[in-house]
Length: 127
View 1: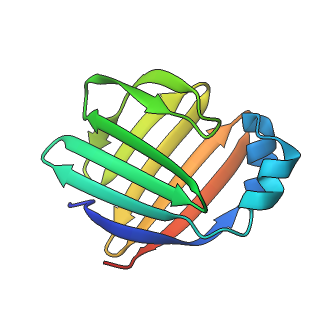
View 2 (view 1 turned 180 degrees about the vertical axis):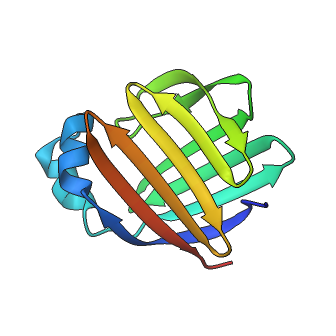
View 3 (view 1 turned 90 degrees about the horizontal axis):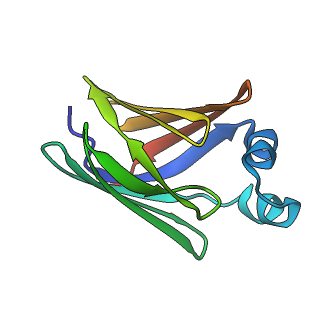
């Protein structure tokens, strides 16, 4: 199933406790909690480019499924990871955060788990 498209964050659960556990400052958490991020996904076979824009912050990650790559984390740190794809799911583990991104029609659900805290983001396709 094709992930390609532009998606806007519709809702999220457990934002503040998850971001605190991930190491973001209280100031950044307060700034970011009400922002509706835009995710743009370009997909060419197993090659992906994911651009997430939240306010003035832009994170761009490029990867090929099954190959080691460098990903930028929520805190701006660059770390090595491998992204796997199983049907309509992309999975990876970065710095103790298990991430599952699943596409269902025009909806993308990203679930991240860190130290037992589950953060769920639901985004809808806008183009």
